[in-house]
Image 1 (cartoon, rainbow, N blue to C red):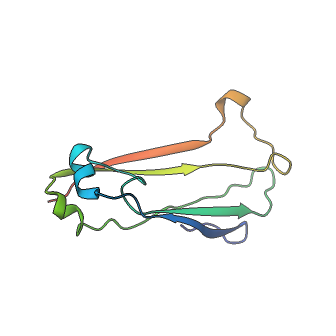
Image 2 (cartoon, rainbow, N blue to C red):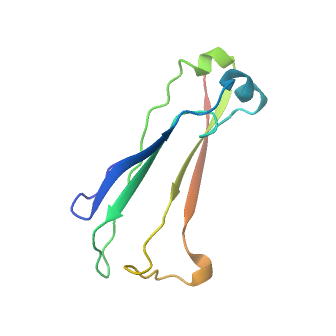
Length: 113
């Protein structure tokens, strides 16, 4: 992930390696997420933000076809997610309580063959 370095420091905090019997599990449910694939969790500490200041995060990664070819699937769905957690003592959310952005997910269906 990349962002404006003057506003934030990002570190890799956790990496999951998925579970066992990956080939069999993907055949049952062709949905690649952290319970099956390897996922990396990145935590970013935003130092300070003023009114009207924005921070842009770009999340990118590579998906290897090497293991997916063993499953013999023609289509595979991949899930990416982002979560916003902030220190309420340092920052004030500008949206109403019930409309806060806290989590987003993206699902992409791609051909494997």
